[in-house]
Length: 556
Image 1 (cartoon, one colour):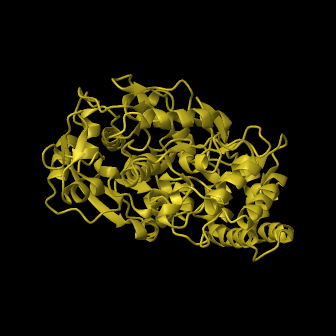
Image 2 (cartoon, rainbow, N blue to C red; image 1 turned 90 degrees about the horizontal axis):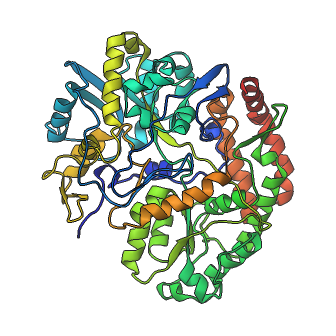
Image 3 (cartoon, rainbow, N blue to C red; image 1 turned 120 degrees about the vertical axis):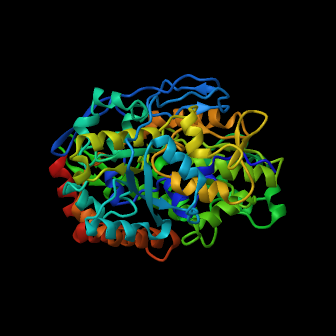
């Protein structure tokens, strides 16, 4: 079978799928990870954020560039005429050490792809890898040692403890180097959207180059064929209609029943996504005109959303194991035709789940669900982080201006845009060994482990793979995904604490997440009473919530 896939997305791990997927709320550390699109300066903490200049994508064949800021570019085809985005060899010889996450088997010591990459960069890369499950522990150990590589991939949602070290000047502050026209010396970095720079900053300071994701990174696919069988010919227009449809997916008679039992939703957090959007719950925090913050669980909107989720559970819309059902198993249920509605990230849906669902059932009918508000008005959409990890340069290394410029040129090469010769090499490898072109000019992975072990592992850093919409094998998918994002971005809301850091949130994140999940899931499933919401709020405040609020308010 022809495998239309980029090498770097061919084997997404559970952790990566979660990172590329939908946000659910109740994430205390991610209170400093979401933000609105913007064009320049914004006050964040004690520093004033100034964005690098932005260079829009080139309008190559098959490109659809949206006029709405914050919407990813879409491509219906892979360019046959690939351009060079880097004119000169970026390196000056010598070695460059890196620290990267590795989601595949370790690459061979005599990796031909790495040898070619070294030749193109003009340096000898010396990568050190952290396997995905151990990344958090290894990056903490690395930071504690003080022996940092030239370029380190840092993702603070996986290892929140690194934030304190980052605030203590462990990494080079790139703000003055890249802000405004400074980025013009690195033209591929200038293609990074403003929202990604801003969201990845800490208190307004740019401490690394972000790996771009869509600003709105979630799609809700629902079974329109089942809905038609059940008599629902139009999408649901309010919360009551959504509840009715989801319950009918579980209890009603439709074509999916031939495979066995079906359910409306696989996981509780999928219901939380629907409820927070329909009931217009804040994106972690809400700020008033006086700079006073209110956490989402303290709002009337959240209380109404929880009450609706209780009703949804009682109606039988959820899988019976929804509180603990594994993420990838839930996706398998959807792909095998057992789930009626599946919220997930843009990339997992269009690159994996929808093609597999259609392969399993060629007659399937599925469509994106654009939610309405609970009362029939507009909903809200929570903006995602818009990035996953940064390439950071240690301060001790960055003090040498020549070395800093060389490393930024190397990162600039790594950020080569879609349609460029460099992008093809980084993401697909060497033609003949790792991929071939199909009759439409799309790079297609060869059989065997080479594409994963030789390319996907060592290439993963900051290349803008997920930040563009391109789904080989379906020429209409990218435009469909972009159209959904275009509808969602104007309805999206930011987290006002984006780019701010609360050390209490860093320390207490796990405990507060556990507290919140215990109460939320307990109330939904009936183990707890809705009346316990007041007690929940008091315990959240006393166990760090109020202190987190004060720390954020001090920097607003």
